[in-house]
Length: 134
Image 1: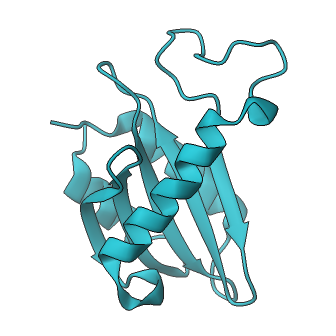
Image 2: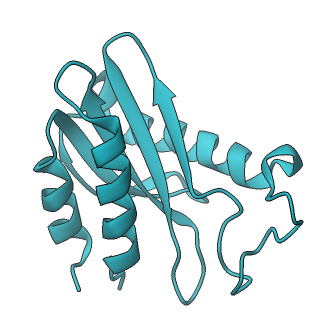
């Protein structure tokens, strides 16, 4: 089971990967990062994506249709992932479910011309399921 560093290096092997981070969406701090940071500032990128993650998880409008906001275990965030697109890149935020709490997400920054969003989403979900924190 890979830890943060191994998961980030695996994410960077995806086609078009520009940068990757594991971020705590409560504190806005990056627990690990590799590659480039969007805007050139890792701390700002972590804080800004954490704000997006917080908004998405606290939004009642984005809750599952069945009203199961905590997932089957009660610890899962109501949103699995967020995809943000712009003219030259994709940002994929995948929430990580953990045994103690679920306040962490993987952030992958992909070049739009070289990246494959569908593949990245599948692989990031696999990485999130295998990620070991601690």
